[in-house]
Length: 198
Image 1 (spheres, rainbow, N blue to C red):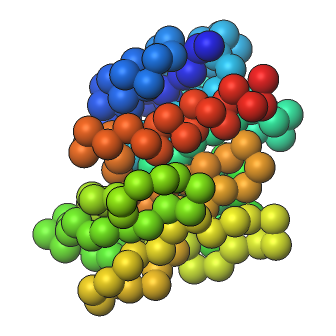
Image 2: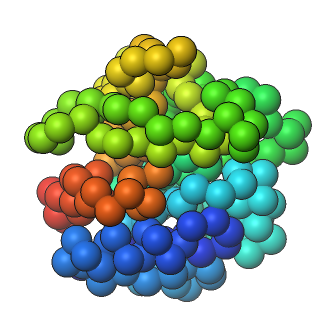
Image 3: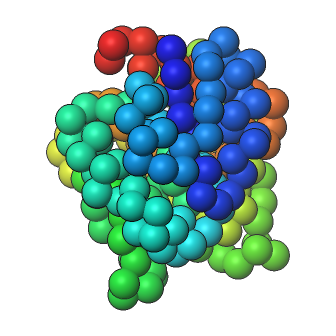
């Protein structure tokens, strides 16, 4: 099973390593022909405006949108969550997204880089303790459509109750960065989603 990681900007290596540890073949995707060779895609954390601009420049925006519409499984973390949203608040007027998940996401909702934090997050469908979730200039989900399942919310602290993990069909998104913690459960959950879709 081949899973691509969108390798335009952001923490690409960390996702490639987490997928490799989850027993799948992971490869970077920078061109439409590389996208055609993978069964699923991970959109990493980074800077959503840069990813948006580069997706347009590299000719990937429309091909990814089409693959999503055709049912390709995609997981987005942090900026990847923003890129999967149907509506983005506090983005640039010209910012594009892949329009996958029926949700409204607010960029940098938790604050600037200096406001980055870690918090426990329980994720429905994934067994075990709460995730030790790392939030870096993270978004949160303001609202979701009827077909979107809320999988996780911040458990405590000033952001308690904020939606930070969602799923819609073959699409998964988290506001936090599991690839930075060594906890592979989100990646393994996504790999199982890809297997079921196949």
